[in-house]
Amino acid sequence: MWIITALRALERATRPYDTEFADAMERRWAELPDVARTPGQVLGRHGVGCEGTHGVFPKCNLKCTPCYHSRDANHVRIDGPHTREQIAAQMGLLRELRGPHAHTQLIGGEVSLLAPDDHAAALSIMREQGREPMSFTHGDFDYDYLARLALGPDGRRRFARLSFAAHFDKFMYGRRGIERPPDEQSLNPYRARFAAMFFRLRREHGVRFFLAHNMTVTPGNLDEVASVIRDCHAMGYGMFSFQPAAFLGDERRWKEKFREATPDAVWAEIERGAGTRLGYRVFENGDVRCNRTAYGFYVGRRWYPFLDGGDPRDLAVRDAFFRYFGRVTFTGTPPALLAAKVLRVVARHPSTAVTALRWLVRTARRVGLMRLARHRMRARPVTFVMHQFMDAEVVAPAWEMTQRGEQAAEPRLRETQERLAACHYAMAHPENGTLVPACVQHAVLDPTENAALRTLLPIVEVRTTADRSSSTSPKEK
Image (cartoon, rainbow, N blue to C red; front, side, top):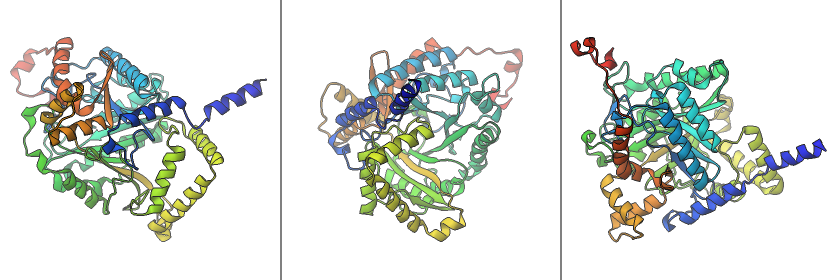
């Protein structure tokens, strides 16, 4: 009997489709505005979108221009119990409203200001609710912190895999060793050092990793985007994400005419760095006025797309993927289990194997057999992303009208409402059971939320005689 029981358990575990996940995607598709229901739309067809935390650790120890945090963010202390409690509540609501699986960002301030044990507890809470967490950081911490996060007090691994997004750009002031970077190139050793810590962690303790590189773009560093990609593409980052600066957060730090760095201009620089055209309509994550994404891989120093948007055969591969594998849960599924799920789909639909083989042959020819042989068949997946946040002056009135059930007549506000409805990035509010787009969080809710946190979790400064007699800042000690 135990054999029958075991086989039944194996059959359930390897079922390709999770009905709850499929239902959550159907709801997400129904919520999308017509403008976002495109052939390449991922939302509602292979996921519900990304998620993020808020109000859990708003403080940061760098000073950046621009900064999306509100004025009060750096007047709130880091508190482990508060962080864990809030993350548990937010993840619970996300699990209830968005289904059992999603990518979620542990974000809100500087994550490395959390004690390693609190940071690890937060990641564990997120995973318990079916979330695949990614920690957001400026990367200015040491290997000792990373090791204490990955390993428990007994020295054993807490996690088989960690995901981090590190933000580097020359408008971030206060980084150790380079207080005010003169240009983007001067940060490359720091970018390389950050990635190297994870290679060391994998080598010494077997912890796998995924790294994303984030960079805010303004007119002041637009012409350096391409060189960042060319210089850093082989450092170990699996994603390069660029955010044209928006008029969000602390207005005291709005130092430039941000909108001169238009989305088209930023994307052109990303293409220049990649050395090729980047088709962002093959797969779309929400509204392309907010997000542009190109999935592909490097062989040597050249980047190639997984699917060529100009080739109808590749678009047919995309459509087949959505049709047969869209409801398969890839997020957080162990590789062996995922392989079993995929094989069950292939067994049920043998044509998918033929489609995949033809795509593989076609892609190998595009790359070139000689190039593949020269690089020992090594391909490094790297995704390029651009996120275009919206300005607070349009988000606030558009959101207010949406809440009243009104459709804006003014074109700019109507566009904002459409983009908010198709938002790829949601944040949870357990106090009222709602989800809000990230732009709404930053433009409308953060100022009030952080003002309340400043009272709840005030920073108490203790000055000594030595402090009062010295002009040296704590950062410089």
